[in-house]
Structure formats: C-alpha cells, structure tokens
Amino acid sequence: AIDAAGNEGLRSPEFPAGSDRVPPAQAPIDLAAAVVEGRKVALSWKPVEGARYAVYRGAATIDETTRKNLRPVAEGVEQPGHVDVPGDGTWFYAVCAADPAGNLGPVSTCATVPLDSTGPAATITVEGTQPFGPGSYPVRVEVSEPLREAPILSIVPRRRDAIPLALKTVDETHFVGVLEVKTGFGEGFAEFKVECFDRNGNPCRGLQHEHVGVVIDTQGPTIQVRRKGFSRLAAGPNDVLFEADEPLSKLTASVAIAGADPVEVALSPRADDLF
Image 1 (cartoon, rainbow, N blue to C red):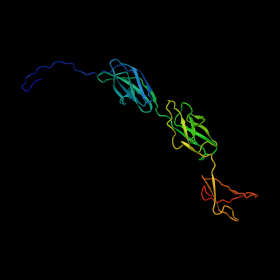
Image 2: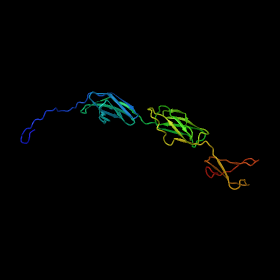
Image 3: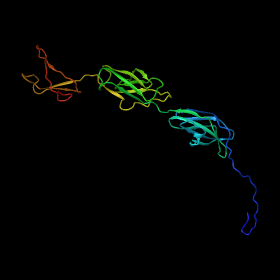
C-alpha cells in the first residue's frame, strides 16, 4: 500500500485466493422412502464421501430441470438419511450431494411414496319411515374409500347389547344388509356402530351426517277411556274420551252390552293421540 506522500508500506503475507465452483460429480444412489409411524416418511441412500445433502420433495417426478423449481425440504443434512413429515398425498423425493462450498451435484433417482393417515368415513342409510316397528328394513353402507375388508356393522338398541348386522359387498365402497326388527327388540333410539379399515390400516373415522341410528317402536299403544258423568251409558249419544300414550295411525272402538252384539263407536279425532 502507498500513502499520500508516496511511501510504500510493508507487503502483507501471501495467501491463496480463488473459489470452488466445481460441484460433486456423484449423485446419491439407492434412494429409498418408507412410511413410518403413520405420518412420517423415512428416506435413506448410500453416502457420497465428504458430502452433505439437500433433500427435495415434489408432487411429480423430480429431475435436473424440475429440481430447480423446488426449494429443498432439508439442507446441510450430514447423514445419508432424513425423516420428512408431509401431509397426505403421493410424494416424490430426490437428493443431491453438496460440497462444503454449497455446490450441488447431480440429482438422484426419484423415490415415490403414498402417504395416507386418514381413516375412511361411513354413511348408513335405512329404507323406511321411522319409528320402525317389527319388520325387515334394507340397510346400505357407503364408505369414502376402498377397504381392506368388508366393514363390521352392528346396532345397539336402548339398554341392550350390540346386535351384529350381516353385510354383502356390492363393490369396493358399497355394502348392503337387512335390519330385522322383532318384538322385544328394544324401544327408542338404537345407535349404529361400524368398524372398518382402509387398505393402509387406518381405522374408520366414524359415521357421517345424521345417519347414526334409528328409532324403534315394537310396543303397541295404551288407551285410556274416560267419560263424564255416570259410569252407566244412557239412552242416546254418550261422550267418551279415548286418549293414547303415543300418536296413532288408526283407532277403532266398540261397546258390548251383555247378550248383545258389539256396537262400533263413532270416533272424532281431536289430535293424533286423542279421540
């Protein structure tokens, strides 16, 4: 260095100068991807001597051209392996070796892995009008994705153990059966239970929408008969009140006098359960 007066200073020690612009020549080989713990993707490959690694993930095959449009999911990886946590989907992975200066070598071959950590959903439909009395009612089960095997369906009447319902396979996502309601089946709301697994072993997420059960009614109504005034019937019209403990679709009544044939009573409805 020279000052303003022209004096030359001491020469500094020499040191090498330059830059490393030569990337590693070898790409990592034998890249493998496997799903672990349901939601993670474990990657492994054979090491490149003296290298660190950059890991890439994409929704399509990764090559030298497409890699340039992706940001690595991991950089400076020191070991020949990495664990990634993507969402559900089919993912493509590739790896590049990097030297200490950060220069990237050629991209590895691509490894593909499908990741599915979400269980199937089921919808149950029962043909008929509720409440269901004694009879046979077709049941349809639809699931959101193909299953490992047919689902196990049962119905749990009030205060009773679960009753299994046999299902037949229509196709990969549709199954049919029959709900047989008999006297003594149980009264009130009966809940459906379903057990199934998709092809990746994820369990059913449960029943969807409002189709989770049905109302069962296998007991007949109880009728109370009331009459104003004296208990004996008088000649001519007599007002009699018939009250049921539940809504009725039909009511017929008759009165029988000793030694005479029954006489039908003319009824006028006041409500679903009152005549």
